[in-house]
Length: 152
Image (tube, rainbow, N blue to C red; front, side):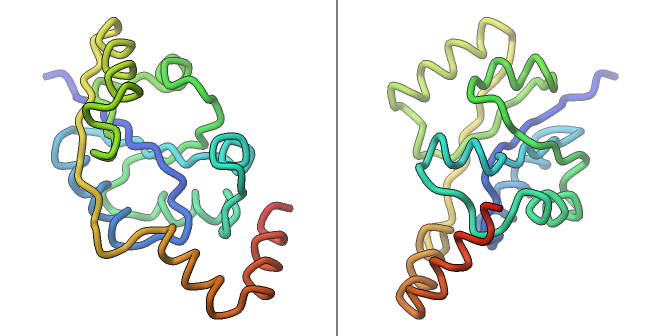
């Protein structure tokens, strides 16, 4: 019997229940789950800011989630290049991409390689963005120092 390999990429910064839900749902739809943890440099490139928690620590956290079979650093901007480096059958993405131009492009690109794109809803009550805002509102100076230290 062939194993279905799934891939769920994300920053997994300020790890919270929404991240856990995505990984849990992803594992329920594949036999082997790879979690791609986006590198600090890729976060700078794509979001214009680094993470609060450095890559090595985020990898360690994700690697120890029971639903995750393997955690890898995601350092390539093109998802097809990621697939070439770490082959998978299913790509899991948040539903904020569903029916968008970027999501449809991703689906077309992956379809050419036989990769299915499956969308999951975000947990609306918690997000890294909300946690980051809360940290900044509590101590804007300390939060910016923490952010600056996490980049190095």
